[in-house]
Length: 390
Image (cartoon, rainbow, N blue to C red; front, side, top):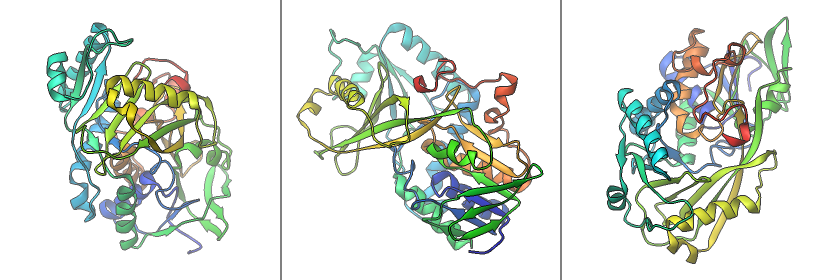
């Protein structure tokens, strides 16, 4: 470890490693240290359900996620590392005629923004997903769906190691098991960070630690408008191929896909209470599985093999918190909630631009922390200031 770096990136997950890679690849900046408290890609990069998509209504969210979707398609070639991007389609189920009408508005907005989207009635949906149970009489009937065929899944650990390998090859230093214990600030500027391996002097630093954002920001004396809440996921025993897309059940939230190994990956809503415990509630497990079995009754015969939980940091409007902090030279990238993994390459690309040039990229500007001072909230769900509901 050198005593001085131009930039210190706090967090060795997908976003931090992508930022490091694009600083080298796009700007030729390599005097960078990436410091990770655990192991590379071992945080929320590993604690997700690997889904990528850009089916958002608000222009800001769609533009950033759609840029990421375009980067995903070529990322294996760019990194010379197979990230296993599979555009198998993302199917978002509507449970009433009114919800389907809202989905139509969202689909039109996506198409106008340059994305792909289709609205399927029940007949077309049954053809697209033959295994889906569309019989009437269910508690939450299915009225149709929005489909984004470019959506799909990406292998999460391959993403972390693909970016890490390229960043390391460019000369960037990556340190595992090296938490930041103190952030040195004086005169309103950042001067360095403290680690178990010693102090690192720097003029710029980026906090990109997902669910630990509030805790690390406190080291610099910052209080962020975010809550940290558990989100759970599960994997069944493997069976033969039965589902070739990603499906999302909106009435209570249960999303599902099948891996190449044959396992079904399932996830759902937040646990609804603040926690850093990385373990979830049985109530949420029951909610997710009950909805999954309504979609695919055959799932009731399968065993759950694994369960995990991650800490999602969710801002007051449910959207990301990205950009400059009041401390000169200190940047923040957090508040991503459920949406962090799918945005990985776009965030890395844009954060590299900000750190290298000092100019806020247009794609990140709507998510600047200053939006809470001006009232320019980015509330995709229209829920309001209730992080546990986003």
